[in-house]
Length: 412
Image: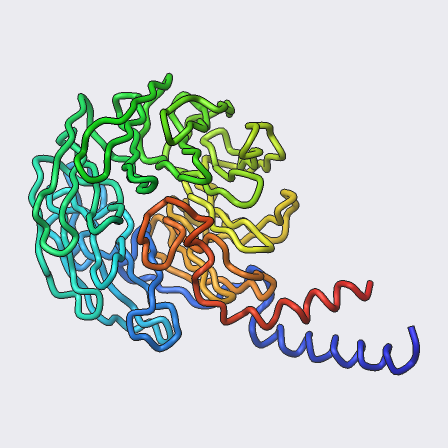
């Protein structure tokens, strides 16, 4: 290396150290809020149209309440400004809100244990309409084809007109439905406590096919990719089914239940967490294990993915960042179990823990965002579906950083 090249490299490294001291090292805490946030479920969307991803989340407790099992009731959905984190609006339901807010077009949708589905104006938080079912709604709403789709503990999957809230159709099964549907290929797919995956015509609600597994489908929700549906089950397995007819492509068995972690497809692999205290990367075409990473407790979190990393959290209280070979990059200890899924914007990871924490972490080496949050897209047009068509559309404010960092790595 000649003298001039060495001088510029040293100068760049000095600038790099100075700059990273300002923006934060990988995994460093950015900010934290302690008040009234309990296991927040985060959706990112630019409400103000100012180029910054704002935050819409459930898991906010407007009024201190507990149920008959002494569990905290978080009854509100709130919107926070992405720049200063001040509250833009809030809406209080009558019951607990467990799922993620879904943003479709200019509306926020969420369900509650008060048996209602709510539709709010994205900019103001004003109620547009609500729809009463006969059971608690624990899952997240899916949206597409001008409709919203959701399951209820009244053993029904509903399809409503997204603008008016008028029921289009209703499909009954024998057990409750807590899994979030996936929408694509002209169908709606979901798993139920009846141990089956159901595929329905998205317009009519007519059954197209069913697949029976050996275990329940609770809150691990399906994802669609290139004609294949992937879903985790209580029988410890990740399934890959043909979206056309429900035929089994492959099955991979872990050593624990797959309760809440939903699969995410990235390039040639499927990522998912299990209650066996491992995070898995499975070849999406063959079901072969690529690698697995051990943690200290169950993984309920659905991962988020960038070009450089996969991010997930565990009940052991840690947030993990691995590269796509399964090699450790960094981890952050929140001090409390984490159920929710990371949300990515710019070089920030947003997440909350089980008791009274909502925080951000820095990762200046994140790279480009591919699957930035639960549902994969910033407006959840087709929640948990067709990531290859709609996945990489989050804010890219950190994009310029990547070429410089890669150049430095190439010098050694």
